[in-house]
Amino acid sequence: MPMQETDDDEGDDDSDDAGDDDSDYRTMPCPHCKREIAEDAVQCPRCRNYLSDEDLQTRGRTIPKWAIVTAVVMLVVFVFSIVLRVF
Image (cartoon, rainbow, N blue to C red; front, top):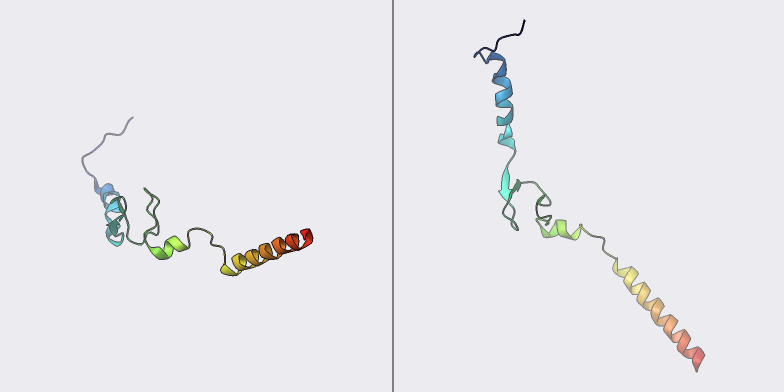
């Protein structure tokens, strides 16, 4: 025999309040797209922009200055070695 539904929602009180525990979840508008995002977010999930300069610098790989200097010096040495052989 099927059970009849009752208007008593005694067991549902806890499940209704489960979504109300967001008091610890603070939001702010994204400075780029103005969508509400978590206050501690590093990147906006909608526009994918980073929220601070510190985070932006760690986003991509940067080539160390010593590697650039080494590559330039090696290129100069290579060019001079070719030029000296020609003359």
